[in-house]
Structure formats: C-alpha cells, structure tokens
Amino acid sequence: MYVELSEEHRMLRTASRDFAEKEIAPLVNEAEEKEQFPVQLYSQLGKLGYLCASHPAQYGGAEMGMVGECIVIEEISRVAVGIASALTSQSGISTVPILEHGTEEQKQEYLVPAIKGEKIAAFGLTEPNAGSDAAAIETTARRQGDSYILNGTKLYITNGTICDFVLVAASTERSQGTRGISAFIVEKGTPGFTAMKMHKFCMRSAETAELVFEDCKVPVKNLIGEEGRGFSYVMECLDAGRISHSATSIGLAQAAYEACLDYVQQREQFGQPIHRFQATGFKVARMAMEIEAARWLMYRAAWLYDEGNRRLKEASMAKLFASEVVQRVTSDAMQIHGAVAIMTESPIQRYFRDARRNTVTEGTSEIQQLVISRAIGLR
Image (cartoon, rainbow, N blue to C red; front, side, top):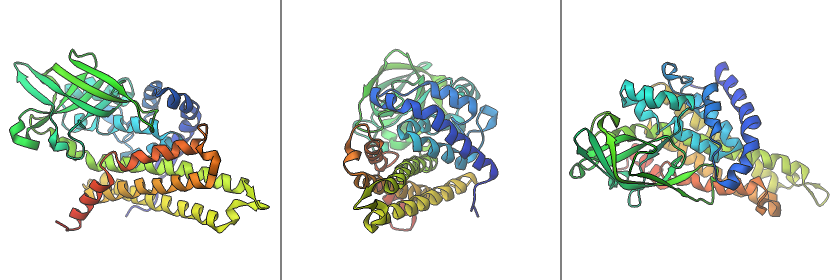
C-alpha cells in the first residue's frame, strides 16, 4: 500500500518547487494583470521534463506517473494556480487521447512537440448547450472525401487563444448519441477555425477562449482512433483529469495556509499575536489538517491510477474533497487577514477568487457526488 513518496518523487518536489518560486513567481502579477499566459514556460518546463511528467519516456515524457504529475502540479499551483491549470490541460486531456489512441504519425507530429513544450495544446468539449451533459454536444463533423467538415462552437476552452492545435469532440452521427462522437486534431490557422478570448474574474493567467468552426476542413488523418469512439476516449481521461485537478486545489490551499501561518504570528492585537486567540489559531490548525487529508486522498488515487486500476470513485472523491477544502481555506484566509485581504495587491484575494473555479471545472461538485453515489451502489 502506498504510504510515502519515493526518493525520486521527493527530489522532483524539491526541483519543481524551486523552479516555480524562481521562474514562475516573478511572472505572476503581470500575467494576471494582462490576462496573458507566459508562453515561454512551456518550452522551459518541457526541457526539464516537468511539462508532461507522467507521459512515457519514449515520447519525451519524464515517466514519473500520476504521483509525479500531481507533485509538479501542486507546486506550480502553490505559486499560480491559473498557470498550473493551463499546464494541466497540456499534460492531460489535450494530449492523452493522442497518446492512447493516436497513430504514430500523430504522436510524432503533435504529441512529442507538446511534451517538449514546442507546441501548445487545447481540448474542445464544452459548448453553449453542453456542459456537465457532455454527450449533448452539437458540433458536427461531416465526412467529405478525404476530409471532415466541422461546424459548431466550443466555450471556456483553456489555452484556446494560444494553442497550436486543439482536440475537438464532434458528432459524426447525431442519431447514435455518444456512440456517434469522434475526436479530431485541428491545427491553428485552419480556414474556418477562429478563437476569441473570454474574460474571467479568476484564474486570469490561464487564457480562455470561445472556439468557432465554420465549414472547417480537417483531413481524415487527423481523426483520433476510430470514428464514433471519441466520447469513450474522453471518458477514459476523467480519472487522471480529476486527480490532477485535486492537485491544483491542494497547491492553492497550501499557498493560502502558508500566508495565514506567517500572518497570524506577525500580526498583533490586544498585545499579543492573533494566533493566541483560539478563534484564529483553530482556523489555521483546521487548514493544516484538511489540506493534509486532501493531499493523501489525492496521492492514494494517484497511486491506484499508476498501479493500472481505473478508480472513478477515488478520483471523484479526491477532486470533490480537495475543491471543497480550498473553498474553506481561502475563505478563512480572507477572514484572518481582514481588510488587507480585500486590497487588489493582496495575493489573498486572488487565492479566494481562484478557488471558486475548482468546484465547477473538471466536473462540478454535484457531478462528483453523483459519480460517488453510483459507485457505492446508489442507483
């Protein structure tokens, strides 16, 4: 049973934390203010092997497993969860379907450059009328000779404005429902493909876009796997996506906790540090406990995943619990810091805003509870 990080993983934690603090932290304020992701990070992380830490070495990955992936994501999220969320798209659902089901030609043309940070990837699933109900997508792909013609709109797409290619889920046979959904690689600059920037109140350093496909012609060779199997390919990615998403929550919660731990020892009221008032000290103690509980729930799910066991229940539990922990931790951090926290220059207000996203993306808290209830036998 998994109980402790290996020496290799501990070294990865130290190295990724050092990189995040030295190379990413100085970029955060500008990235947040301008709502622009610092794209140079892709190549920097790719060269170090941190960009797609779980991907196999034969394609340039670090082959550190899901545990290693979570370590890197947590450390980057501790510095800037917006930046981390953009990177997790690259290492997860934007590339895993190519890894698992793509042709060797697709892997060499898209996967390898993405792992190296030479190309930026995105994934297009969510639509105006299809969110939690992903099977309801309306984007279509009609076969025409040696091409598919795509028509439709995708919303809230991370990396959509900066990507070199996007994986698009589209219906090739509407009458077949989920069995009629296929996945395609669409390159930036393809005629009929446009991306428009969307603006968020949180996670501003992760660029988000609306993607529009108007008679967009995609070659048949860009179909991933088999026609009609795209939805199943997406579902296969859910475990990994939810586990890595929990790492973003934990990293963000850790940042808020560390800020509070320092503040309550420095701030004095009524002649003593405020941590000596139980109302404050107990809040910080509970933060530490809940973050640790969330972290080990995440690590267990990651370990099970690395062992080759598909554990939808454990992945959903890790994602749900971590995303709710970060809500409580950042809310308490706001209360502890008081007026200073609501100033725009305070990182605490950014933590508070960013945390709100985590119970919505990668499956809402309600969807996670639905998954868990079914897994424990409630039908």
